[in-house]
Image (cartoon, rainbow, N blue to C red; front, side, top):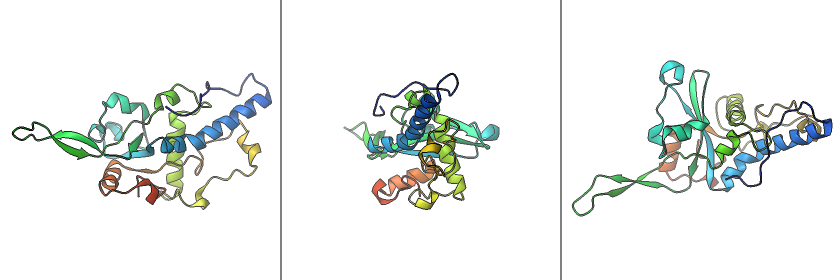
Length: 212
């Protein structure tokens, strides 16, 4: 579960300017800190890109990359621009599955690195946390990645979004939190994640973890 208490979603209508500004700051704050909270809680959030599916890229089977059923991880699945995207996470330890058995040992453990469902994602779906949505996080991460020539440059300060008016801009209910550089979550394919995990790469080695 994400830290803190969360708050109900909100809209800028029928409230005072001060109330709207406070809620806008909350929304911007959560957009910046939710990915970091996941990281600190033992996950590394990643926007996983799936290409080549049927029906304009929207018909994919990602089940081999997850332990959970598809209807669980599909909470954070979206399809746009002819491709599928799943906001997921990875844990910092491998999982084991039952491999071919041997006499006296019907299940031989085999290591299998997999994607995971981010803890608390259902709370974001319910409109808490300043009104942040899963769509905000997915499109914000995608826009940052696309603005950097479809590469991850999360450790480069020059790629951070820098609102011209500082706190005044963050307090504007019209602030678009999906602008490039604001939401910073790495983007890559499931195979790239799987390869990096199998190689033993750690999050301390790169700000783009688990991607290149």
